[in-house]
Structures are given as structure tokens and as C-alpha cells.
Amino acid sequence: MKLDSLRILGHSGLSFFQRLGRGSILFINILLGIPALLLRPGLIIQQVYSVGVLSLLIIVVSGLFVGMVLGLQGYNTLVDFGAEESLGVVVALSLVRELGPVVSGLLFAGRAGSALTAEIGLMKATEQLSAMEMMAVDPVRRVLAPRFLAGFISMPLLAAIFSAVGVLGGYFVGVNLLGVDEGAYWSQIQAKVDFDDDILNGVIKSIVFGVVVTWIAVFEGYDATPTSEGVSRATTRTVVHSSLAVLGLDFILTALMFGES
Amino acid sequence: MMTSRTVEIWVGLFVVAGIAALFMLAMQVSNLGTYSGGEGYEIQANFEDASGLKVRSPVTMAGVTLGRVTNISFDGKSFQAVVTMRIEEQYNQLPAGTSANIYTAGLLGEKYVGLLPGSAADPCEDEKLQAELEGREPDLKGLDCKPQHLAQGSKIELTQGSLVLEKLIAQFVSSFMDSKDKEQTEKE
Image 1 (cartoon, rainbow over the protein chains, first blue to last red):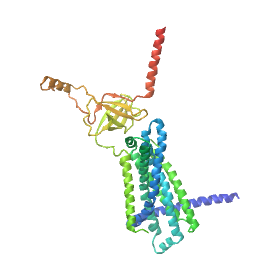
Image 2: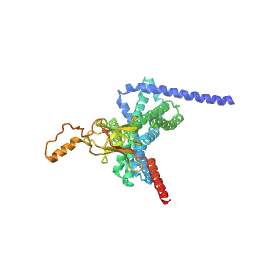
Image 3: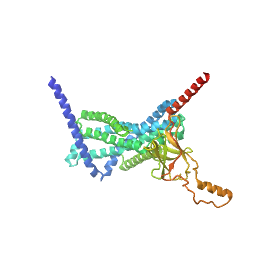
Image 4: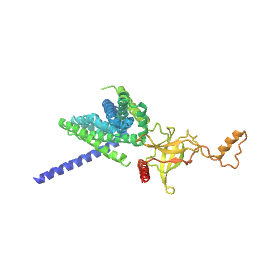
């Protein structure tokens, strides 16, 4: 029936907006829970450990390899123009502006976001969240807010580490393996990379990605169907949606930050 | 579950590493380490052609960066580009007769302002030199003494603007054509 297909469309539209509404209300509730949370830093530290510190290894290793690949590829192209001294600029600008925030955002979604969703979803499925409510403990403030804040704190730090390690990886390949002049590598970087335009904008990007990825992860976990299948679906959705959000937002942010010049 | 002490130490290490990475990006990777904003004095120069020059382009003398271009505007009366440069405070001994040229770094590099030291025509200096040679006290009365060094608000008089490739080619082609014309007339 034609009416049936129309009904399905309407249903999916409605459920989309319902989820968006629930997500926004949850976001506001989490933000309201943050001031009270600052009195209990132990909760935040525990979460920064599981969200940030445990993501460190994958961030450092990928940053190193991304930087080294950029060094190799950039060198091969630049050497044709006799401009291999600019290798540092290529590596540093692409890392600081784009790859640092974006790739660490994607890795963060895969490593920390999925773990958050699975943890919270399982808490819901095993009725730990309901038990908390029975004890008059607000699970949004006790469970979700510390995780959200931890993601907000960790993501910019992870992105900065990613970029810094990447620049060092490019340095290793460019200077030690391919023979680019060491002084030229650093001085060209310092001449071309601007603190306000490039580094601060990269930090802003990583903060936005951190907020969005953790928000999606926390919401998907909290909103998951309390079955094992529901938790697995929520975890998949977290990774897919936050990766898409990171890439889409990156385009918008880049257009806003670098579009005019 | 690890003890909370170990967790706290790890988190502390993580935050320190993150801030160190940001600090390294700021100091080693960006221009924040080399750029000293605010201090120094501003000088101006008019150029026939300032194409390719940008705000924050380096101002150099003998290949050393002394300052940066802070503003580029257009003078509607002389139809020239007015380039304002900020020179760092420690380089306040530039002679008043310094000339400014716009050069290109490398074949395809960016434009920068190169300063060349020179001496301005100055009757005071001439008189001092003359007096020293003749072994008498310099007589500076009635002479128009100018400041010896570039300072805040000084203007560089001698300038040479950017060389635009098309202009050079046009000059070359026209001179080439002229010589050919001459050859032909000589033949006739």
C-alpha cells in the first residue's frame, strides 16, 4: 500500500526527532550535573583514565605513523619542485589543521566512544541504572556526567599529542631518512604555521569533536534497548554516527575557519 | 581494578603529556616562539608596487629578520602602496638612509622586505667629518640636523617595489622588438 510506505516514512521521521529531543534533554541534564561534579574530582579522574589514558597508545602510534607517511608522500611530491625544504610545513599544517583533530576524533570514537556506550548500555540492561534511581541517585549525574566531562577534557589533549607526535614522525622520516635539512624543517614550520590561525583552530576543532563524540556515545548507551542485541546495536551506532559527525562537522568548521582567506 | 593512586598518577601523566604537546606545538611548530609582538617601533615606506607582500611578511637586513610587515594600505594621492613595518626594539640603530626593497625568497617563494643600510645626505655628519679632518670643533649652527637612526614613525625614502614577472617579460619583449626594428632599418 502507498499509505503504508508513507506511514513508515512518518514513523522514522518522528522517531528521529524524538531521539534528537531526548538527546538534547540529556545533554542539558549532563551540563546541569557538571557543577556538582566538580566537588568530586575522584569520579572525573577515574573516567579520564579509562577514556583518555587508555586511548593514549593508539593515538601515539597512529600519530607517529600518519606523520611518517605524510613525510614520505610529501617528500616524493615536493622533491620534483625542488621544494623539499617545505616538507615540514606540509606535515605540520596538515596535522595541526586537519589530521590531528579528525583522525584522533575518529580513533577516539572507535576506542573510547564504543567502550562508553557498551558500559552504559550494559549498566542499563543489568538494571544498575534503575537500582541507582531506587537509591535516589541520579544516574545522569553520577554515571553520565563524569564520562562526558572526561571526554571533553581528554579529546583536546589527545589531539595535541597526536599532532606533536606526527610532526616528530615527519621529522624522523624527512630529516633522518630522506636528508631534508634539519634547520630548514623547523624554520619553515615556524615561518608558516600561525598560532592563532592554525593551532588554536585545531584545538577548537578537537574540543568540538570531543563534545560531540562523547555526547553521542553517552546518549546511545543511555538510550539503548536494554537487551544484549540492543547494546550491540547502540555500540555500532555510536561508532558510525560519531565518525560521520566528526567528518561532517570538520567540513563545516574548516569552511568557517579557513574559508575566507 | 587498579588502586586509585596509580590511576591518579596515570591521569596526571596524561594531562602533563597533553599540555607538553600543546606547548611544543605552540613554541616549536608555530611562530609564537619567534614572534615578539607589541614591542619595537614602526616605520613606513612607500612602494610603487607591493604585490605579493602580505601582513606578517618578514622584514630583513642582511638576511636576518628584524621585524614584520604590520599593515599595507593604499595612498590615494601618490597612488603608491604604504607599507608599515614593525622593527624589534633591539635593532634601533638602523641608519636614516636605509633603503627598502621587496624581494622574493627563492624562485617561487614568498615576498619579503629587504632593508639595505645607507647613509642619508646629512650636513651635520659632513661638518663633523670635515672638522675631524681639519682638527677643529664642528660648527653645527645653522645646519639642519636630522635624526641619525630610524625611529617610531620614520619614513624610508628610497624604495624599490616588487618585480612582477609579466612586467619584466614585457620589457624584455619590447626591447627585443626594438633591436629587431633597428636591425631592419639598418639593413634598408
